[in-house]
Length: 78
Image: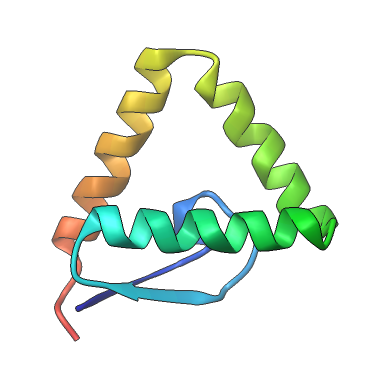
């Protein structure tokens, strides 16, 4: 199991997510993002706006995912 924070995944807080795969941690992060969106959390809304800009470019988004996947893969197991 590995740990990444919301901030490490492009978010706005230090909440830790724990998962065995990058795909799992991405889903947990996505769920957290949806919860923060529903709460209209300003810091998370700003982080989401940055991600939406990134998503306008398929290449940019793929590069971001690849970078985050490498970060996840490099983490020590807990």
